[in-house]
Length: 40
Image (cartoon, rainbow, N blue to C red; front, side, top):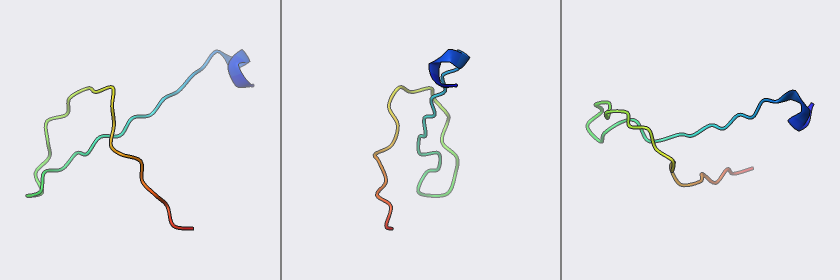
């Protein structure tokens, strides 16, 4: 349906774990992690 449906979705991902395995406090952000390269 494209833009005619009236729905736009965006997904953001941030790193969630500290190096010691504990979970970081989640803070809303506009920037995410660096892009990941996929090996095909």
